[in-house]
Each structure stands twice: as structure tokens, then as C-alpha cells.
Length: 86
Image (cartoon, rainbow, N blue to C red; front, side, top):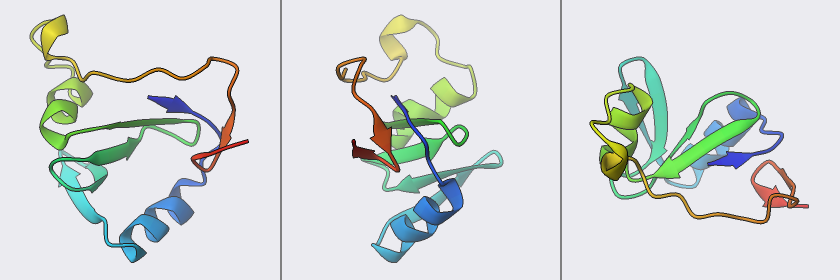
């Protein structure tokens, strides 16, 4: 999960231009592949992981904590703009 200032329409178009596939799931657009995907929750939050891990998490259907995607951590003070560290 990343927090930043994402221009989602621009980023989504750039991801597709660079070869990412748009994966639609229940009205939401993931970008990437089944193995590695990103979902922009809004203009300030993005979540990345494998599509099979993200789908149940996104729909609120994760059975328990062990089924939640494993997110790496970054320094809480680090800032990003359009996915690039500032």
C-alpha cells in the first residue's frame, strides 16, 4: 500500500502504454498481470500485489489475516509523487 499524489488517469494510461494489462474485477480496474497488479483506490492511495491476493481483500472477503496480501513497508516519512520517491 502506498500513499501519495497519484494522477490516476495519467498513470493508468502510462501503465497500459508500457504493456500492463487492464484487469477488470467487479467494476474495479487493476493494472498489471495476475502475478503483479496495482489498484488505485483513489488519487492518494494505491495497493499492489498479486491479483489473486488483491481481489478478495478489495471485496472485503478475506477469510482471516493470513489470507491478506503481504505488503512491504517503507519509511513512514518517505513521500512519493506519481509513484516516484521525492
